[in-house]
Length: 378
Length: 135
Image (cartoon, rainbow over all chains, first blue to last red; front, side, top):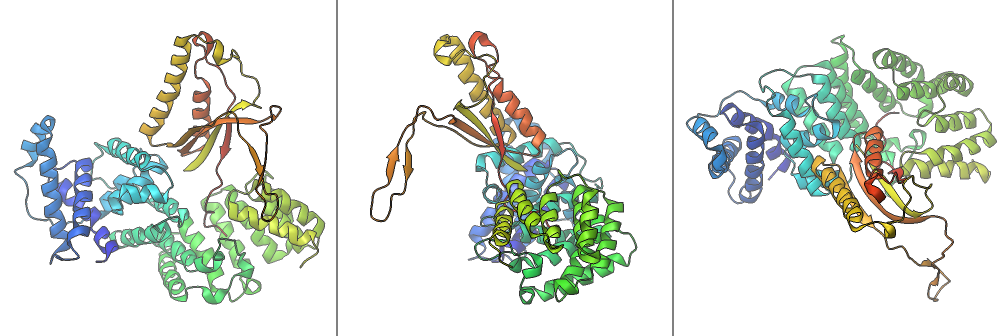
C-alpha cells in the first residue's frame, strides 16, 4: 500500500465531512481514525474506491463520536439526517487555507497542516520536531480550537500557505518522516489545486534544492560547500522538472520572492562548476529579490554573490555596508578575506564565526576552515 | 520554532533580589513556590511548548579517562566550583521574545514573604539542526 497516496486523500475526505455538517475539529479526528483503520485493513482487503471507503468509515466514526457525547446531542440531531453522496467538489484547497489561517502561530499552522492536510499522525509530527507527543497533541488541539468558527468556504491567502510549506521544507530530515519530501508532496498537491505563479515558484525552489541534497553533506552530516560538491550526484531529473516549472511561472510575468529564489537556485543547479556559474545574473536576481523582500539574509547573500561576480574586494565593500551583527556576517567576511589573499584575517574571522554559528554542522565547518588556514594547508 | 534551555543554578548566577534561602521559608511559602513551578510547567504543556524539565542533585563527581586499561579517575565534588547547575526546562517556542517572556515568568516564582524571588535564569538557544535553504 502506498501510504503517501492514502494520505493525499486526507484533505478531500475532511472536506466532505465538513460539507455534510461536521465541524472541522471532529471531522479531522474522525478522518485520522479512518486513516489508521485503512493502514490496518487495506493490505489484505484493498477497496475499489479508496476515497469513498475513507468517507464512509470516517463518517461512521464521526457519528459514533457525536452520539457517545451526550452534551453534543443537539448537534447530532442536526447532522444525522444529512449523509448524502460524496460530492464531486474537492475541498483540498480550503483545508490548506484553514490550516495556515493568519490567527495561528507559525508552529501551530505547521503542525495542523501536517496533520489535516498531510495526514501524518501526531506521533510522527512530534518525532519530526523532537518534542513529546503530548506537547504536539496539545499544539494541534489548540490550533483546531483557534480556527473553530473560521468560514470554510472563504478563499484564504496563498502567501500564508506558502510560508507554512516553506517552514516545513526547511526543517529537512530528522527521524522517520522526511519533512522536506513531505513539503514537496504538499506543494505539488497545492500546485494541482490552484494556478498561481508563486506556488509554482516555491515548488521549483524546493525541487532545485532537493535535487542537490545528497551532495550538500557527507554521510556523517558534515557540510560540503557549494564549490566542493560532487555535481555528478545532483538529481538531473528533479533539476529539469524544477527549471521547467520555474520557466512556465516566470513567463506569467507576475514575479514574487519564491520565483526569484528559485531562479537563483536554478542558476546554481545549471552550472557545471562554481567558476562557471553565472554570478552576474545571480546578483541581478538578488537585486530583484531585494525589491520584493528586503531582508538581512538577502542582503548578506547578495554581498557574497557580488564577491563572486566582481571579486572579493567588491564583496567586502558590499558587506561593509551591512550590520556586522547579522547572522553569518562574520562567516561571509572570513570567506571573502581568504579569497582576497588575507589568510590571517580569514582564520581569525572563521574562528570567530564558528562561535556564533546557528547550527552544529556550520560550526564544525567554520572551525575546520580556521584550522586549515592556521596549519598552513590550502 | 526554536528550542531554548532555561538553566537554573545553585551557584554562579548573579544574586537574586529576594535572596532569603529556601531553608528559612515558611511551609506556606515553600508550597506556594512549588505550586507556582508546577503550574508554570502545566501551562506550557497546555500551550504545546513544553519539551522537558529536570532537576539535578547538588553534588556530582568529576570523571576523566586515565589511559588504556585503567579505570577512569574520579574527583570532587569541589565545594569551590563557581558554576553549579540545579536543573533546567526545555521549551519549544515561536520566537526569542516568547522565550524571554517565559523565562521572566519562571523567574517570578514566589519566595520569602510570597514575593517574587527574581531568580536569574540562563536562557540558551539550542543549535538548529538545519539551515534555511539560502545560498
